[in-house]
Image: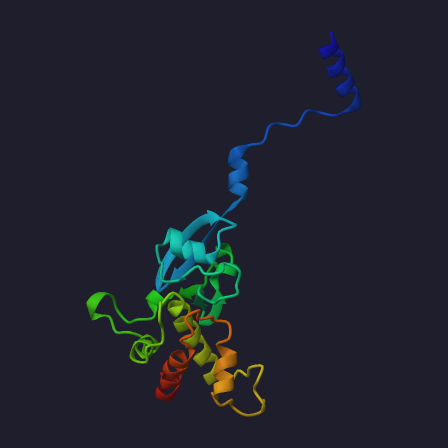
Length: 203
């Protein structure tokens, strides 16, 4: 009787019991599908909307050259190029890149396997010993490639004095433009030499 009375009381209030949550609907609400081109290869992806671009690259596509360092956008180890611009992949959700072209350190070289030709920046880092442990190197290289494109296009930095002229890639300019990439081993002098060598070659 008590149950019947309660049901009658609920009916009089106009309230109805909520349906149990649908786990499939909840899962679908947290996934997104998108198209993305990574290292010139097209991909159709369906992922959890909370997945970062970094985790997509490393855990779904096994492109482990891009490193997870701080995972907070502070170290630069996860830097990749998105439509030619530098992006911290740990701070960028994968689903935000529908239609984008992403280049990781694996995609900088021409060709694959033993016959691949290294990108000039990759070759310069080897020639000038622009690394020690190597963990930050993929991010350093991708950032350097993007940075030189910005510089060649005349983009100023925080330390550019004359905004009406093309900035010179001085030590201060280089330091500022690469300040988002940390090397815990402090290989900065050799990293700078590698980048300057490529800038002089016009690559």
